[in-house]
Length: 205
Image 1 (tube, rainbow, N blue to C red):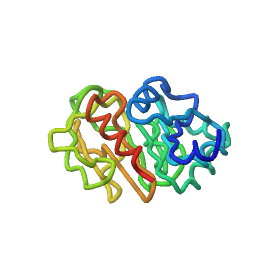
Image 2: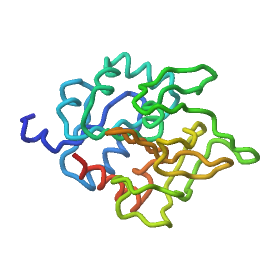
Image 3: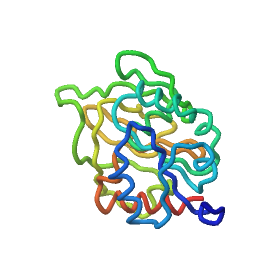
Image 4: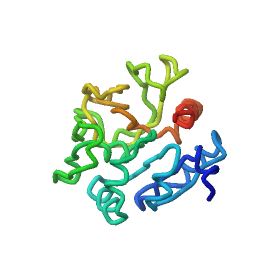
């Protein structure tokens, strides 16, 4: 891999707890420079980094620790996008699994169980984004944007919230701090809206 080819590369971190195929296929539809990697050098030298994930926070953090990537991710200066569990791992902590798991703490919010009240968990399916901010990740989206969710835990609304959604309670559909961005929904499963979001991400430097 030459330095020139890395200049605009989007790296998907292979954590071992993610569905790489759907994320990879979604990204290569909007950019021709996508790399899947789990080594520090490739991740650090990329133009932007995507942290996907499915499953629970304890397993996700264990995987990042086993790969020696915790400090690597925390030190990144380029745009970093966490999706679903990847978003939750960007937070300070998670109570998933009945224990408190220390996460990456690059966005200082905490992940809690979704208070769905009479509705079923997980929150699964299409839902409307509410009140999203003028963040570059949402450039060109309108007020009728629906995205695809699968989750039982969430980030509460806070100063880091850049989009909300409602399912039993209002929660953060998107969070951000400096170069770190988290999306609770799956853009790779969110049709044209998701493609637009990924296109916006791939334009960030």
